[in-house]
Length: 173
Image (cartoon, rainbow, N blue to C red):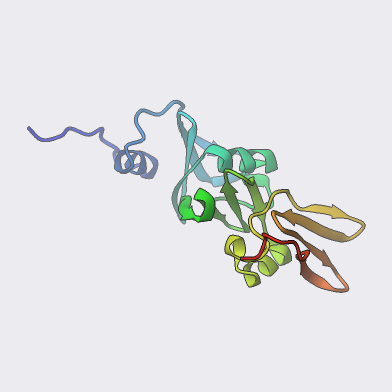
């Protein structure tokens, strides 16, 4: 007997939910208030968003971080990938239009973007000497900084982004 699946009528969110076995939706489909080209629907603790650039799921601590930042109105914008897991310490990341949210059990979920993200990339992300981000970017007096497991990245207009990793036994990667 063939498996009977819910019909999607060509709806990208329904097609995604069927493909990934997300089950029944827990909300109706809505158009995002600040991005009227994008639809969203909840599936329990997961949110699926879709527009002409793709359909992606956001969940768990990464969803919580995106919500805290202001959803689609945030500096991150909309997701452009699903979460990708298998990083050191069981970590995951999800890319957004203007940045990335990384998560690990030991660090929590935190976004990186702009010059601080670029400097972290030069330092091999979580596999490098800084480890995962453990705090959100803080802006003060025209400069910005973000704490990582083993150091800090600061940015100023004068000096650009600079990583600082104290020489402490045990944090070398």
